Image (cartoon, rainbow, N blue to C red; front, top):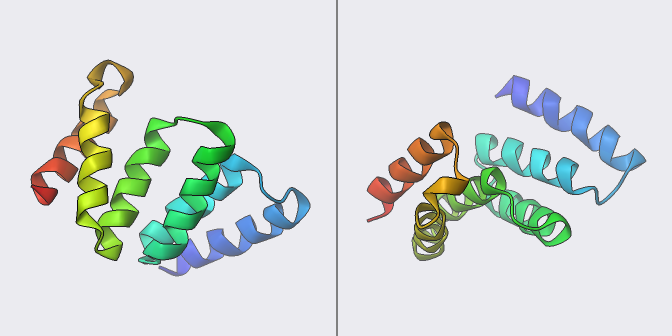
Length: 105
């Protein structure tokens, strides 16, 4: 957890230099998922997706954040949408989506 907090601090410094950059928002969202700060993660990931468009890795993180915050229905909806397009996922992402679907159904 301390490692994630250090990463979060470094990321905050980068975000001060280039605020609103989609990649930085997504990175902060990922760290927030790891720290269990699911609402913050959802905000950052949604904003990153709005700025840059579809990104499967970010959508998986968003589904995890929704699951963590108790919005299982939304998490399941995202996971099902990802599972419906397996050709767009790499092997690791397919595994993550399968695991999400198993937990959420």
